[in-house]
Figure 1 (cartoon, rainbow, N blue to C red):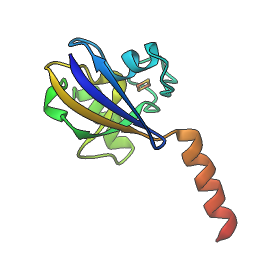
Figure 2 (tube, rainbow, N blue to C red):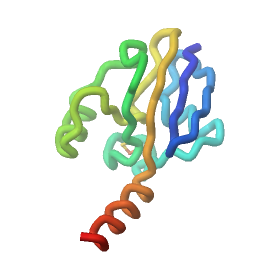
Figure 3 (cartoon, protein in one colour):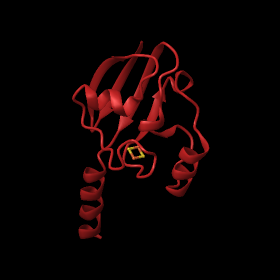
Length: 113
Ligand code: FES
């Protein structure tokens, strides 16, 4: 098990996630609101997360995930949480931000320019 801290829109939820589980799927199965428009198929990027801690405990980025992240200009510790499978025990912190919230903030910014 990995102790995963999910930071979702500022809320902190800690869940023990078994080795072999994806961060997105296991989080959703445990009641977390993680967007997943393509159904965990690495097509939409709505499950985007920043891995603040424990990236080395997760599966490595495959080419299709890297391509999606590159298209969005995401580098470094960003991942698609549906593609992040826990491979080892330890502590992980994954930060999520709702795309709807981001869209609302973007709209708000454009109003005040
Ligand atoms: S759910 Fe669509 S890319 Fe992860």
